[in-house]
Amino acid sequence: MSEAFKKGNDWDIISLANYVSEIVSKESGNILGPAQQSMVMSRLKKRMMTLGTHTPESYYEYLTKNYNKESLQLISMLTTHHTYFFREFTHFEYLLTNLDSIVANAKKRGDSTIRVLSAACSRGQEVYSLAMFFNHHLKNYPGMKYEIVGTDIDPESVKIAQNGVYRYREIKSIPTVYLTGNWMRGSGEISKFAKVNSHIKENCSFGVMNLLAPEKFIGGKKFDIVFCRNVFIYFDQTSIEKIVNNFSKFLHKNALFITGISESLKHTKLEFQTMAPSVYCLDPEEKVVEKPRPLSIVKDKTVPRTSPIAKTPIIPKPIRMLVVDDSSSVVKLLSKIFEKDDDFELVGTAMNGLEAQEFLKNNKVDAMTLDIHMPEMDGVEYLKKNFRSGHPNVVVVSSASREDTRYAQETLNNGACDFVEKPALNNLKERAEEIKNKIKMSFLNAAPVVTKVDRSFQKSFDIKNPETKARFFVGSFSDKKKIIASLDELRGNQPPVFLFFEGNGNFLEMISEEFKSVPNIQVYDGSTELENNSVYICDFKEHFEDINSKTKSFKKSLSVFGIVSKSVENAFFDLNETQILIEDTGDINDSIKEVVSDIFPWTSFAHLGTEYLADDE
Image (cartoon, rainbow, N blue to C red; front, side, top):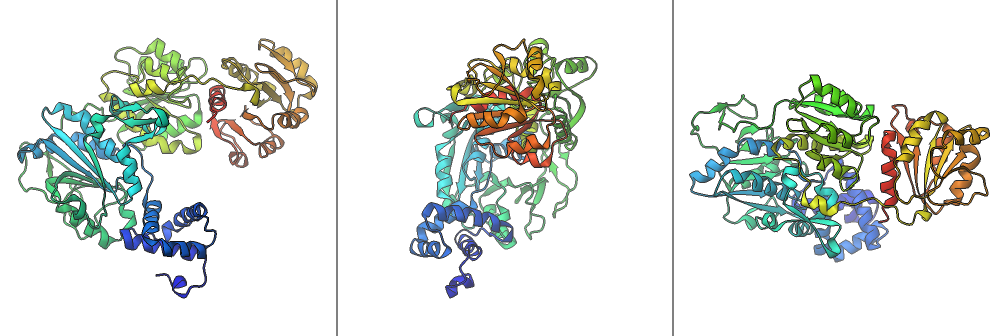
C-alpha cells in the first residue's frame, strides 16, 4: 500500500492515483506505471465527480467501505482500452493467406470446427470481426464451422460484448465484404444503433476471465487460434511469460498465438516459432507438409520454417493506386499512407474527375480513392460517366456522411466498392488503416453493393427549425466564384445566410450586383429583418458583431474562404454554438487551428454545414 495512505496524511490526487493503480495490479495483474499515470488521474477525477467525492480523503473513505464493488469498478475503468473492428488488419490477412493449413489441421484431428479465443476482447469488436471473417471465408470449405470465445476481466465490457449492439458510426469502419448481411438496425431504444445478426452472434460466446488464471474459465477447451492483443503493455515480463505458458496448455498442435503488432515475444524466455510479425506457434509439429513454401529466416529464437502453400492471392501486390482529391493536403497525406506501405504503389494523383478520367486512359491502375466534392467533375458524376466493368476498384474517401442519400449512397449505387468518412486533416492519419483495409478487401467484393444496414440508416439532411439557425460565409471578393458555387449547393429550407466581406464596406451595393444570380440576396443594414432562405451581403468590420449578437442563441455554421486577417480570426474565439470550417489553403495560422472544427477544401463547406445544422441531437 502507498506510504501516504499508510500514514493517513499527504493526501493528493497523485498518491490516490498510485494507490488505485496498486489495487488494479493486485486484483487483475495489470501494471499501471508512470506511463499510465495521467490516464489514471484523469479517469479517477471523473469517477470522483460521479460519486460526489470531491477530495482524495473522501474517495479513499468510500473505497475502503465499498472495496469489493469499487475495485471491480476501478478495473473496468482503468483496463478498458480503445479498440475497433478489424484492428491491426495484417493478422486477418495472415489468417486468410493460411486458412488452408488452419482448416487442414482441424480436419487432421477429426474436427470440423475452428475454435478461436479472443482474450482481453474489451467490448467485443475483435470477437465479431473474427466471426465475420470466418463466416465469409469458411464458405469455401464445405462442412467447416467456427466458434469464437471472447473474454475480458471487466464484467461491464463483457455485458456490452454479449449484447452485440454498437453505434452505427463504429460499424462504418467494417469493410463492405464483411459488413454485408451481418448487421441490422436496432429498433425502439436502440434505433440509432446497429446490432449483429443472429447467425453471427450464435457462434460467439463471452465470459469474464483473468489472463493470469485462464483455467478457471477455459476448463478443458482447446483452440486453433488465440488472439491476445494490445494487452501486454499492462504486464511485466514475468507475468507475460506466465500468461503465454498458461495459454500454451489450451492450444492444439500448430495453433497460432497472436499478440499486438508492437508486442513482440522476442525478449521473453519462451520457446516459440515466429510465423509472421506478432504471430507465433508455441507447439509446432516437426513434420513438414507436402510441397512446402519456404519463409525467410526470422529472429526471436526462430529457425527456418516452412509454411503451407497459400491460395493464389486475389489481392494484387502491390496495389497500384490513383488518388483523386481536390485538397492538396489530403492528396499529400494519402500519398504518404500508400508510399510507406509495400503493399501499395502510388502511380498518380488527380485533382478532380476530369483529370482522373484522362489519367486512366494511359495508365494501369488497380484501385483508386475518390473524393466526392471536387470542381469541374465531382465524384458522383465521375462514377456515373466512367464506372464500367474492368474499371479500377473505387473506395470513396469523402467528408460526406456515409448515410447521406444525396452524396455517399449515390457513389455506392454507382460503382464504388466502399466508403470512408474523411475526418479533419489533423486526424486523417487515424483513418489510414481503415482506408488500406477497405481497398484490399474491395478485391473480394463480388460486386459493389449498398448493404441492408446502410440502407436502413440512409437519410436526407434536412434543416429543421431554420429560424433558430444561421450560416456565415467569410471571405473576400476574390472568392466570389467559390461562394456562389457553395450557395448553389444549398437545397431545401435554409436558415439566413450572411456573406461577410472584409474591407469592402463602401462597395456592398457594387458587390451585390456581382451576386445578382443568387436568389433572395440583399445588402444588410442594421434594420434588416432576418428571413429564412435569404442571403445577406455584409461588411465584416461593420456588421459581424451586430449579426452575431442577433443570432447569439442560434446554432451557426461559419465557413472561411481563403486567408483572412488576424482581426477576423480573433472574432472567432468568442463564438458559441458554432461550427467553424477553414479552407485548406496550406497556409493556416496555428492559433486559429485551436478553435476550428474542421479544415477542408471549400467544395465541402456547403454539405458539412448542412449536416451540422440538420443534426439536432
